[in-house]
Image (cartoon, rainbow, N blue to C red; front, side, top):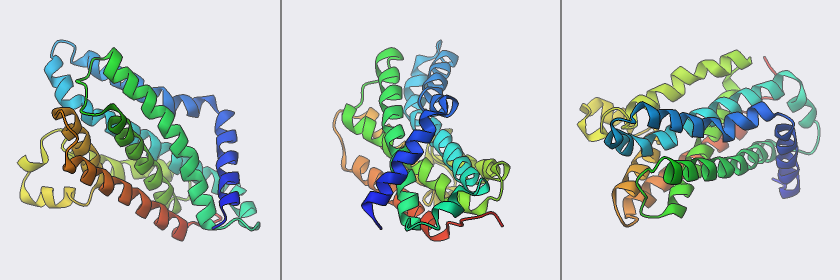
Length: 245
């Protein structure tokens, strides 16, 4: 892996995204709009928003980043960009890490915007630590991007990349503790949820907003999410295909 090539890839991806305002809006603005709509739905039941809001804060960015990164990578492959890049000294690890850094920077902006909105405009209960609150949001968004990069290798078209949403994302949403606490699920559902990283992102955010101090469980859940993101990037670099077919 060459750091210069990795950073060059990051710069190229950011430059492409800079010329694509719709994608930038989807990453930075849409999660915040969804949180606002969610708060309005429960305007007459603020206790529901306080209970479920922290989970939605990680669910929305996770879904958006998975969708955008998977479609973007497939588009690069279809257009022949990956094939041209792979004829240069650029390695697979440089390419995947470059994409991860680019979307990680966007995730940081996304997390700052949605955190400021939910804490100071929507009056979500203040967490034990605002910096850790933002860190969880960023790590969760990077997880979505990493999974999107990893699963993009299995798609031949952009439509197929979108089709991974119900197979990869929705089961995690259902079993992450959003609808019902994980410890109230049946044993076999709890067992499945243990291998789904979104569960740990939701758990860390709920734990952080429910207490006045940052507990060890928050850090443990955060490390699990970060580890899963790293594993997804390694798989993505290993399975990366330069062309469709």
